[in-house]
Length: 220
Ligand code: AMP
Image: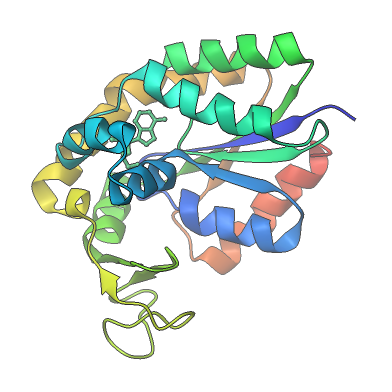
């Protein structure tokens, strides 16, 4: 068995992180979330973290070469038959091209790209209300998925915080960046026959069966 991968594609607030948690709980898959990896690097004050921090605070994308190197290092360290779920990667055409090339060289296969479709209003609402656990990274929403105790993670008791890039001005920029730099990947993967569209504007309980069906259909 060769390495296989799937991609979760969608605007900020589309529900990539939430759906990734569901998939992870249902099957053995290695979750590679580039945003989480970068936030870990920032916390560790590594050279990469220091470079990424400024871009992230402004809602801009971190340069392609840094991202691709970080992801491929992780993939190359994994088992030769591992299954990966990319979340928030690729985000630009050069990233997609480099991923293709890397996978081709290693005989790895991209099995499907799930596009989580949402309206702009829903993205805005989800991002402004999002709260994240500092310790375990679990996601909450002040109204839609409130924690049992305000400000405290249900899962590990960690402190909930608002990501600096979830402030209204930065959210606008991130949605623009998605339109300008990432949305082109929809046609790119659709032309390759890899794209599956899932309506992610619904409640998660309605979205999950469609997502799991898409994964099963593609024998991921
Ligand atoms: P996320 O957690 O996926 O919303 O990502 C948060 C931020 O990390 C983004 O706004 C970018 O600044 C940066 N980032 C995450 N993934 C990528 C990527 N594939 N390419 C460039 N920047 C990224």
